[in-house]
Amino acid sequence: MIYFSAALLQTYFFVTSEKRIPSREEWSYGLFGGIGTSMCTFFLIWSTESASPLENAMIFPVFSVMIILFCNSWGRWLYDEKVNWKACNLCIGGIILGMVDWRTILSYFS
Image 1 (cartoon, rainbow, N blue to C red):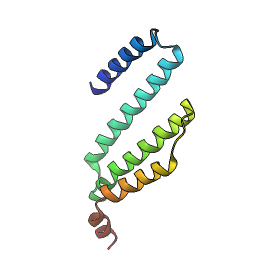
Image 2: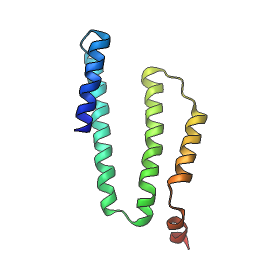
Image 3: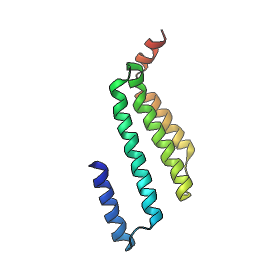
């Protein structure tokens, strides 16, 4: 329902600001992005059920890093956005340092 309500809001804002119906290409990009996001979220939640403590410590940071990389790459490729890759790297480094359970990881190696 979260994705459905977001899709409804975005469709409303698009139609009211653009005063037109989305093109076939815009529908396909939206559908592709929505299905991809839904599948990733489903598998992320499902993976926490069978993960070990080490894997649980890594699931959400890896997911966050991949979202940053994918969204910036998508924006660069599709919309020709200028991406500040240094800022992305800083965010990725902060996520890894701040969210990883280092005790679990270090105890796994010792």
